[in-house]
Length: 516
Image 1: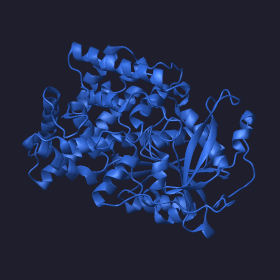
Image 2: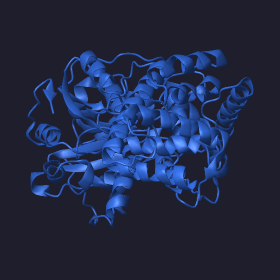
Image 3: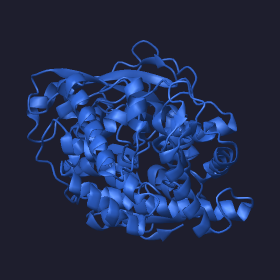
Image 4: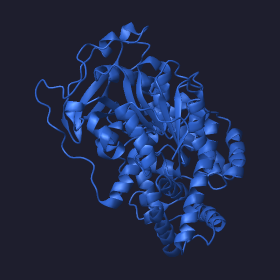
């Protein structure tokens, strides 16, 4: 049970695992006293009205070698309304530009989530930006507050998280609804008991404010940014808070900040439905598809397969989650929708499950989705942070009838994924931290051009959301990619890559409405 917000780090890991490549080695050496390319040494200045944050803006990062780059800790206030109160450390990783003599500045990157590790994303610098950008920019990632190495939020232990993710995600009886609601309530209560005071301060606005302090600490007059998936929400929020500080900004695979929780769930249900139909077409065309001989047959077969898992789970081969349930099976299928390179893996996994009663392949896909190893260890905390952030940004209802109605309504346009997504945000209905936050449109009036990229068959961030944000932004520029998978830049299309590389390196703004 969880909203669909898988970060791009997981997709990269899946692709590299198939190719046999590795991401990181030891980072470049930092000589004593060397800042390795900072563009400015003058102390940062807080934005107007934030003078109480001056000490945070004036800090200088102390870089040291670490796996894949150079690491430092950024100090930020726990609670921005109490700048003299408790502080936390945000972990930052920098991969220096390969051509220091022609370095432009820093490019801060975020892979999505919420809960994805920007540190791990930046470690993959050679894969996430084009070669011209890699040459001219330091690629900088940070784990947002509450994530990974930055005061991580932990709600439950690994075995409890296994149970949470493996439970029935589509309750279809009164007893199952009550059981589902109790699990959602228990999860929220465990977060309150174990996460500490940071739980109330991990909203997207908090992370965006951290990002401006990072900009100043990096010595950059403006923030250059690449955000994918939820990273677009973070970037758009930053742009609306600090429009005059927006540099070269790319938002790829958009989550528009004004979307309600219900709109997110419905849009993702329809997006995953569309993506699954695209996989089904490929499965049929490749021949010997295990679920049917036409797209409609395959989709019906997929729903029947998940229903069978609900009634009778099959062996998963996992020592701690030995049964492939509907919950785990759904996550495994969803994982393959993020990158068409994984479609053949999904087809083989489904064939093994159907023909041999062997759920190992689907469980392995589900593990990539959940940042979970084959021995049952979670390498990140995205499966918990995603609720901590979303529930502050988009509070939800505790009325079970709301979710039951949405499950029925969403199934009209997304019979495979509608009920799954409709129920996914229920923990936010019981969330212990109550806020007055509500989705709002962003305009970022006064910013420079912000490039928005949408992929027509993106499962997790439907193309219409990119159009929606572009129309809201005072200075938006839309690139449309007719393709499959989650996000576009550096994934599969030279047209998109060339336009964005030129925007970062040459400051050439793409043609608004460019179609690739």
